[in-house]
Length: 257
Image (cartoon, rainbow, N blue to C red; front, top):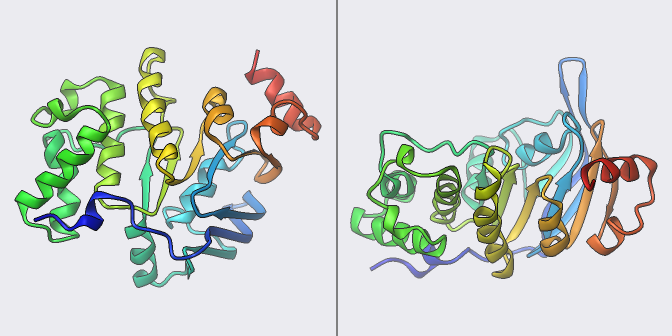
């Protein structure tokens, strides 16, 4: 029998899901994040946009320590992110991530890709892991692909597998790093619809994307970053209609043509 908590996102225990306080990061001499302050509420959907090299992907990758920040404080569901391996593992158990490229194992079937962490990390019996995986493959509307290999699926289907794989671990927070940028235009819609469903279910989400239609429809707040700084932040109805900063206006003028 599968534990019920593996079939739905675990609840956040804090009203603030993610808090970043004066976060700074450098790559050598390049100052990629500059005094970033951000608080994300439980259940909030944040879309982060900005030009290439603005620090937006680095920002979300710092939340689960895929990138290490050098200064400032990051707190995820009440746990401060430090160099302590135990804390990093604790946070990573609660934070799912979907990348631009799908990062599926090509030699494993779709079902095996989804059950790998369940059996190795959660120590779930294979039968139970298969049940959980099929639950989430059904949720992203591709259960019929379970026995196939990644190379037999379209890009949009592979990205939905990547989402299902993350959901199998019952994350409290989902991070998306430009999840549609590697897809052909006709495949983008199916992935965005899956993400919209997650948003409707109340998942806390931080999404780096240039899909401004998704931002308008789903986001509680839209963040514009440039040169490692949060330049502007606000609800979609304000962000798109009446941006305050010239850098934001220039960016939107280019991307919304």
